[in-house]
Amino acid sequence: QAAVLAAATIATPAVMWLLLVRFHRRVLAPVYARSARVFDSESLCRSVIAMAPVGIGLVSLSDRRVMLASDALVQMLLPHGGDHHALSARVLERYDAFVADGGRGRTLVTELAVDAHGDAPLHLEIIAHAARYQGEDVLIAVFTDTTAQRRLVQQLEEAVRAADSANAAKSSFLAATS
Image 1: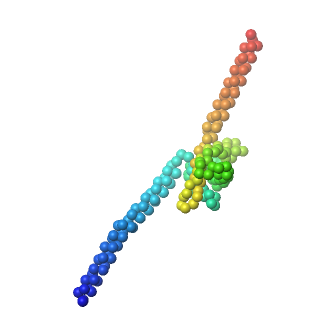
Image 2: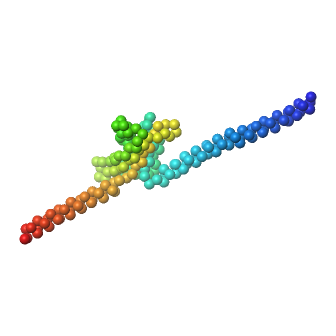
């Protein structure tokens, strides 16, 4: 009986070890691999956000807090007070009105002027869409600075008006001289 007890004492840790190794290979290793992929994906997304040439913001729809503001967005707003919280509040107002008009599940595309009463207002094109992030409903918004384009369009319109005025003056001059 002592031999059976000794064999059982030796076999029990060996069986436990084999079961532990099998559990590790079948359960823990795949879970760890999936978790590593999630962390890699999060890191990749943060890298893409950091190097994007547009401003990107992520705002919680439940408590209205800014969860993420890309460096490009912060730099874009810096000359105009740098308050991305106030900008987020304005975008959320527009998004709430958009959803109230039946826009739930669709993408909001709008324009907004920051520091509109200043000498050089910042004109932004905003594209926003609802999503889920870390178990919360969020609004992800992409901000593109359209100030230079607006200035160019304004200069082109002024050039067309000046050309039309010069053409009218030439016509009246020719009519007067003939």
